[in-house]
Image (cartoon, rainbow, N blue to C red; front, side):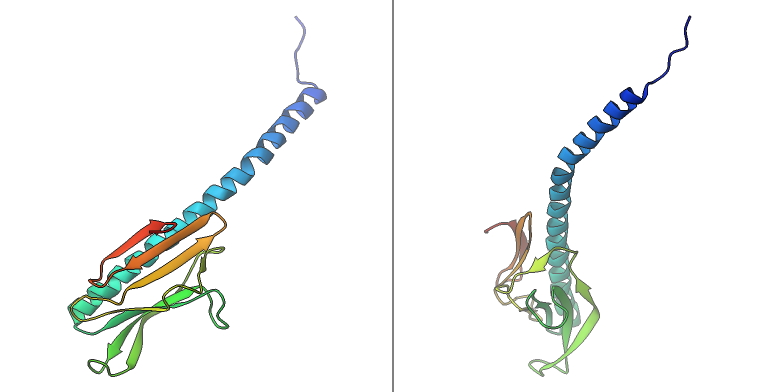
Length: 155
């Protein structure tokens, strides 16, 4: 019996085939990752809007979510929760927690609602916050009774 091994040509062909497969699969994989990023960011924003509503109800203080869109000079693609201090319509807003940043590649549309405010009864301004990236667009919509929903594309 003779010993059997692998030739350099067989290794070269195998590596070439693997590189071709990786090259074909990479764009699809990157598109999937971008899709997950924008969807996750939209659901996280919706959760923070629901949190703002809950805080308004429990603390009996107006609470709002303020967004900074992609074209802003300072801290673009971020948002923050704020609560009103000193009673109804005092105009004094205090930041609740850190300013939250969207994932890389996800942007807040400049046509989005800049602020969504919840009253002490849980009602809200009508508002739509639009998040987008190369894979698509999600809208986080708040209606007048404070219901928050997430839609892919147009609602």
